[in-house]
Length: 403
Image (cartoon, rainbow, N blue to C red; front, side):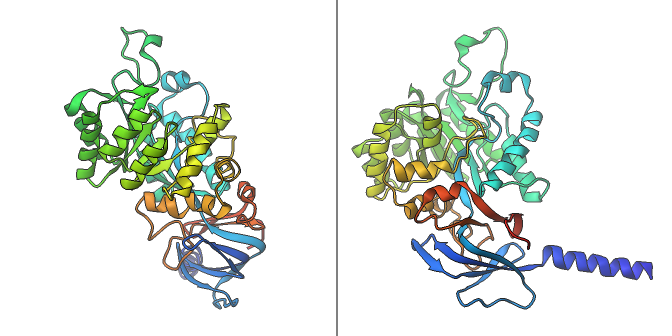
């Protein structure tokens, strides 16, 4: 009898934990693909996918209703430039005092903060001296060991020898001290670094095309991009100088990170090569960097339909700062419409990741990464800094109502 009851209990647990249907009702829904605000949606979620959308309040008998009246539904947001293993504090202390294991455990807190803000996917672009820990974190999230956004890992990063943090002149040259990235010189070392990082599971390669001034030459950058391409892996290039941006685009990178020195000719070059721009405005605003020229060309790139993706560089500044504020800067300082700012964190980012069939939209068959905010963010982009409901892969992470 006891065995039978236990069997029934287990069946009940499996059915209602892993097979529950939800019907999410809201006032509005952002159609990110078409740039429209739709009225009175009902979104049906089964397991971890969206299985239906209707606008006449049709709810399956088996569904648990989540009433989000007064709210607008959006797909989960995506931050394409994070450093989950950094904390925006003492960089040397992280390298020399904190093990990768410690930093990985600390990252669990930051992953939770991202989910709470409605960020359900991140591209982590360099572990800042923590080896391949981002790949382990990605596996832990995918396996359900820890809660967090989907993590697209980029590993150690690749920089020209001696041209990254911490400065070699600040170290004792007799000691083999760690650095914030993997150094390489010449074609062979660049190719070897790519092969090593991909062999450890990294899904992107991050290269530093410059560090204030150009570091790698074109042939070295081309070697990194070409080798990564053999394995179907894309490259993100830190590039802040005109020469660094041009070399990276000509060599075939997928995205330019930061891009401070973009101008008309470089924007046109990026358009011709279908390169994305990840401007990371929040880090510059946090450190009060002069931004007028960057905003000028970001606006120009936007008007010319260059693909812009939301990326913030969080981890280079403290995690207490809400990285979703990035979208406010796009609207208020760079002249984006709120809808187009939302696209940078949804459909554009999904396209960058080659996941346009899974992420970035609330559509049937897409992964159920869904957030909701009070009011309409297509009218007021700042509303996205106060997300009230978060569902990631069909699991409710945050809700303002009783389910």
